[in-house]
Image (cartoon, rainbow, N blue to C red; front, side, top):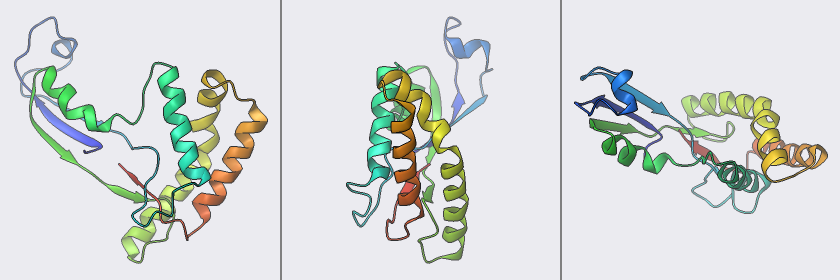
Length: 159
């Protein structure tokens, strides 16, 4: 299922929260990425990178703010009255492991983005909702950064 959904707003009951934000014919765009990262060759399996993604999903669920729900976007949009739903999936490598120049560039951007934001993505969820201590999060983040830089791990995020 797509991680990017765009849809045209259709006539809906006035008590729907979207009716105050969008006029009929308006559009909404949702962007998200899927966790845990995937690989076609199994190289993400049993890595700190995979564990990190699974832990974030678990913590977000405990927090009552689930992530990794991209496959539900279409159904949710349909249920509140959207029509003409279009979905696109973009694949972003976790580092510059792919052979193509464009994919290598995407991998470089993604590597920088994820490694720079890793603590911010992780700290609140893991300490508040899974009761980790900051030093434990620091160790996990160091392991995940090492996995992200490892070009033998052919990971990617669906976005």
